[in-house]
Amino acid sequence: MDKQAGIDIGGIQFNWDLEKGEFLFEQQDAVLFWVTSAMKSFFDTIEEISGNEASALVFEATGFRQGILVGEYFQEMKNVSVQEAVDLITNTYASAGWGLAKIENLNVEEKTFTAKFKNSWEYKINIAQEKSKGGKYMPAHYAGIFSGLLDEKIWYEVVKDQLQGEEFTEVKYFPSTITVKSNIRQLARKTEMNEILHLEAVVEDKVRDLTELVKELSSPIIPVLDAIVVVPLIGKYDEDRSEALLEKTLTNLPSYRANYLVLDLTGLNEDISLHTASFIERIGSASSLIGIKTVLVGISPQLGIIIAQSNVSLSQFDCFQTLQHGIHYALGQMGRKII
Image (tube, rainbow, N blue to C red; front, side, top):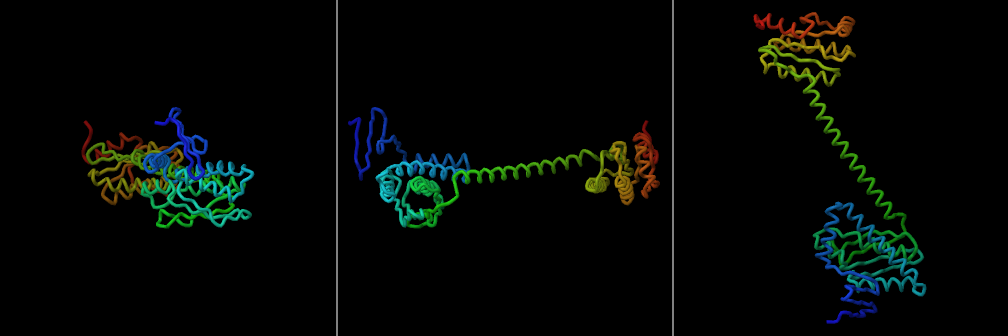
């Protein structure tokens, strides 16, 4: 078995050196992969890790930048015209298994052309992946080739897609201000915005959960003795919090078979508003409508002043200095006492 071998196909040189483990394509190190197995696995892994949108940009950017190297290489060949370089490139790529590529309507002055691709290795991978739309590597790669070859930023638009039943993939190329870097920045901004929106949604959910928890913990309904329920008012009550507590209290009091509701005002915020005083009157009056008497305990001097200066009247409720006094009073009214 020969350890070294070479072959010329269509003017393209292939060489092998088995002792060194080398494969040379046009005297350059190269490597061979099975397209629909090894390369498919490579593409699948990138997409799995990066996601479809990011991986598509990775393939597009990689194809374009690799194409730049090819285009600049042929541009430096001074004795080769652009058309001759195009023929060399498509012939070289065909011999390397990249599929059939035809360049049509090339206008060197306007730097526009059309490319038709058929049975490229990317197309074969996309078939194996059961995709319905062709990838971006090949179109972007030729945009990179001609950007380097024509010394102009070239971009592309896919107008026909072989993966969608067309005979070939047709791509229009033209000068453009679009760049790989701008596309990467755009995706980064989009990804960042999506992450911000996600975090905002998470924060809103947490705030909502915390608000509900605060409502549950800040104004609990405590059945201290048979037929006596204590509701401590803690902190400051705005309209939303007041309505929530009112609804919660009136909904749950019947289940405790309460005769007396003791509102403990000791924990109210020192910055007491007229709204708070009015709320106390409302919850007491509403309780009386369902047959439950209200006792107020822990009225602070500040709250007393606010009530005295307002139109709010709490005279219909029995008031006591401490919670203990209020509970003893309620028991006494029911003919009971603590022994």
